[in-house]
Length: 292
Image (cartoon, rainbow, N blue to C red; front, side, top):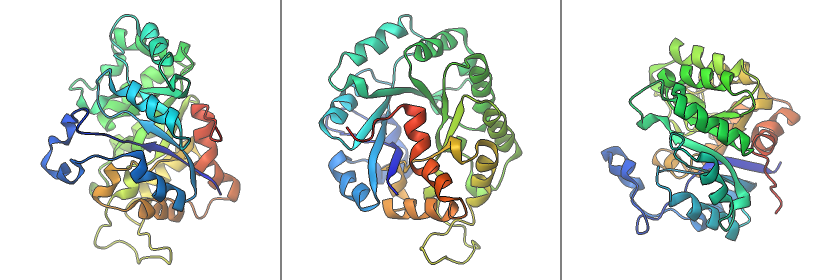
């Protein structure tokens, strides 16, 4: 089965700062990560296409990602950033599409995790920006926590022509167990037809000591399975997509381990359902052309 890795990053600290890496626990990530680092690992896992996702709210990052994608057939799509609250979002998107690799722009993301207002997505200016993203034929990636997902559901309901992609299943706290606020928020998003979710982020969560016995494939997934099952029951395999979250995932797991965890979680699905999670949902949601 060919695989689309629907969520990864790259960065070059000599070219641009990554302020979010200042957190002490992220010290191992304070180095450069390039496509050339990912490519051999991706090929070894059967990955034939990827989606490269923004990391900072700087206008210069997206053109750089588009140029990287244009130069390497592994990247089939780029989720970039524009200031959704600024006037002229349509012009900003159009300008990105004029850049080298601009035809590979498939979505926009804004890191809600950096916004103190949990209802940021409900702001009128942001809603206008989301409408412009929809008019451009792009999708919107939602990266936030449980307290921010209610506003995401409201925005998705108010913008039915825009596909909302929930990154990392809404960043649940795996070690704390299922939180009903998170579960309810995920179910509310999943109830909307214009939403999909990424099985990403949690795949690298380290096993809890009393986790179930290690299966033959080497993956320990007992601690993350309840979160996967909430997402699966809401979105179904036809609206779930696999993403590695490399290189952030390397803090706790290898690239191969992330794939092993995803395979273990989805082992009970049919071949067609597994193909949806590992390839087809991403291709459809982002409008990818994986064989450039």
